[in-house]
Image (cartoon, rainbow, N blue to C red; front, side, top):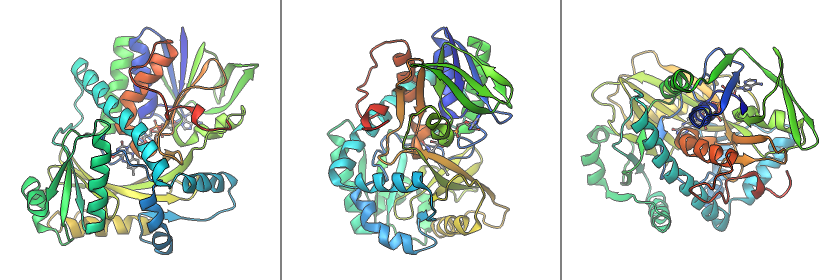
Length: 418
Ligand SMILES: Cc1cc2nc3c(=O)[nH]c(=O)nc-3n(C[C@H](O)[C@H](O)[C@H](O)COP(=O)(O)OP(=O)(O)OC[C@H]3O[C@@H](n4cnc5c(N)ncnc54)[C@H](O)[C@@H]3O)c2cc1C
């Protein structure tokens, strides 16, 4: 059976590997000249399986008025006459109740814990060198209110399989001595000790090579999707700059661009680009060994080989990939305050990209109204964390196998109108 996967980011590559391994004849098409060259290129590196609280929550809602007035806040909204942005924003606000946030947390956590299992299976089967670390992720807090919120989240997630440790300030410094130099107040922390980190870009490059060598997956670069043709409830072909491409089944994994092409065939997925930024520097002995999440600034840190990656910011600015220095500055300032002894004299490598974000948080995996079109998209801030699990679920659905976990809250069906 021939499968055409659209897009070779984390979700396209992991799907290609999983489907290739199961005997499908897989081709991946990608507009760039390599895989993982877009949003999956220089992300925060965190495999944060336990980080299940969606952006849309009562806690974020209470901070919105303050954030929207500040240019250096973690969330920046550039208002524009864009009906998709307005629809997405309203849906985001509707999801900011405690009930909705808890419901979405349960779905995200279920997928996260399953992804960890799938990722470990994959790592056992394939030798991939991607600066992997299994020392956990340390969440640090600067205010009592934020720490209390974090503790409540740990307790809630504990009922659904989550397992994190609450730490005193001294325990935080003991676990990560690099933080003792911090000029930012740290009053306590949470150690997500089952969480991990690694370089998503290296991982994708090697997994794509394994998929093609071991399972005959073909990667065709420089191929841009321009449209999709349908007949009744079937997709008949994908239109590209290189002509029409036919298969028996199609997987939509175009990240933030998925809604652009789905809309043309009448499927309205609520995915909007949420721009994020990262900086990368050469690490020195004063950089943290553990991957960190600074809950106050919504910034993450990962030590990837000899580099330190720092990532954050959610900017709503449409399909604009440009690097806005005004957004980089708060990340650099926060990192310099937290890690004053890191080497800040060097040239900083900067990057910006668009997270394919749903308003409620979980991604969209599986079936569509078209019998031979499947989705593996909308992973927002957690595409690296959820890639292995999402692609295993996708392959199960395509093979008509019962998935190992409940799909509730993870499919297109959760939105009333599609
Ligand atoms: C700053 C930042 C930090 C992040 N940190 C983390 C983190 O620490 N942990 C985590 O789990 N997640 C993180 N994420 C999220 C994660 O990186 C994304 O969820 C993930 O990369 C999305 O993968 P994807 O395959 O859906 O999209 P992409 O990687 O964007 O892949 C889609 C592919 O489709 C291609 N494409 C688009 N349009 C076309 C077309 N018309 N024709 C052909 N090809 C096309 C693109 O070139 C691209 O290669 C972060 C994201 C950002 C921006």
